[in-house]
Image (cartoon, rainbow, N blue to C red; front, side, top):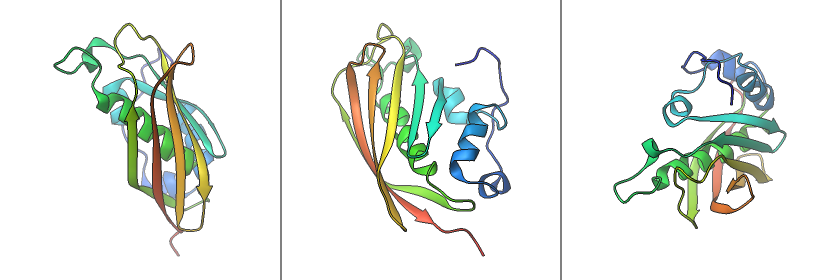
Length: 160
């Protein structure tokens, strides 16, 4: 993740629909579009994309802790949801959009501020005309698994 502070905001509908999903997401990585507010709030970034795959990176911190002294499960769920959705978005044609209709997360080990850098890698399992499914894994730098997830997304064709 870059130390350069970028503008925080959301892309316009025109920016989203005027290009395919992979091109848009690569533009996000390249700094062409503002950092999404959720990424700024939680401190994570989209770092790699290719057709059917998206990778997010972050470092769990004390500010992510819940009352019982570990990183809140919502942190892992958000990273995984982002990787899943963006993996699906990489398959979207110009003008096509998607939305998540189901998310299943399994937390298998606690994250702490001592965990160090983590990555959430999402990959598309199935891409149909109306529905896409994907899976994602949250791992530390040594490859240790902390959480995994699946999603179902609904796809919407370009507007006429």
